[in-house]
Amino acid sequence: MDNIEVLDMGKKEKRKPKTLIIITIIIILILAAVYFLITSNNSNKHLEEKLEKASIDYFEKYMSTNDSASSYVVTLEMLREANNQGETYDLKGLEKCKNQSTLSRITINYNNGKPKKVEVELNC
Image (cartoon, rainbow, N blue to C red):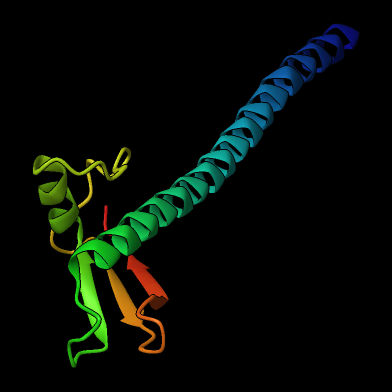
């Protein structure tokens, strides 16, 4: 009977390392998922800031502040077309974004003609 107990204890000891390995793998997978979510959000924020800056520059160069409309839209397609014509807007990282639906809405301040508010809608 003592032999049977020893064998049972041996089996239990072998199960513990397997359980520990499985728990470790699950923890690593959870940490990796959290890391990728955080870096993805930071990457999108960086791309939004890039699109915002390019849109403001485009707005100041090509849009008329004398028009009656107070809101303008600058799409990624407009910025890419301007780059094809010789402009130098930094659009790196936005290659996979959709041309028409990746846009900035710009509301101008008529006191000085500069953009008052920029809303970026990033659809990549």
